[in-house]
Image 1 (tube, rainbow, N blue to C red):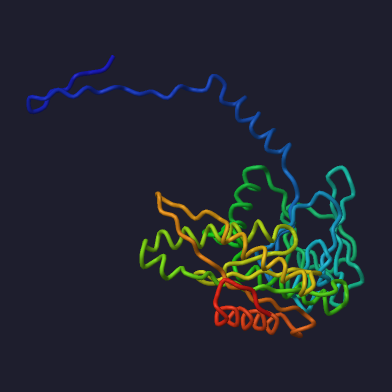
Image 2 (cartoon, rainbow, N blue to C red):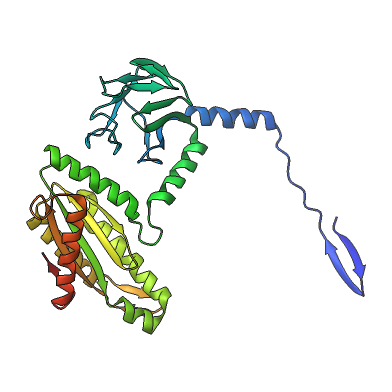
Length: 311
């Protein structure tokens, strides 16, 4: 029963709240552990090297190397084009197999050509270290959230610039060796955000930027990848897409931004967007010059009256 406590003429009622105990806590723990083990899956994590933080869930045999078409493409120049295979041998057994790499493969500092893997093993390929992990559902969820926080822009839902740059460099390498015919780049800058900030405040400006990122992501879809790299600046890369097709996609983005209803707390605003398009190898020879060419085209769109696409 609640108790009455008097102090200074006032009465305060205190209630004793008790946690209901589990009827069989040991059985509950055992069932939970069994469920977690059932859903455990192996994962390959890059723990050192240029691509640190990348991870790959393993549900089949995969190959690792500098080849952009590899299951886990690495930027480490000391890694061979196809360096190792992480092989599923069935019944929960996995192995690392060296694919006649130039610099060889080490497993826990011992050179190997074919060796079984166990959770926690570290695979050394060039200057990159991979860790073979077996993760239960809780750890998998935690790592997925960490990966999202490291690679996704919180405001727009697009990639952070670091991840975009890495993938663009990998795509350019694929063009260089002929496995991808071309890559186009679109650089974008919203029009009118300063006026929105001045009139309606920075919260409204941030809302417009975030919403625009989601619109851009929907238009790009699975044809490429995109990033927000400045306050209201965006970029997209389109592997295998010609400049003419990239121009059409850029105009689709322009139209989608103009058609989107930007409304928050009863206030409606109407931003525009200026876009520049360039392609490799037509306009540039490397990732940096490709981005620069698209950026210069975007400024031509700005100078030409804004809310338009330029090349």
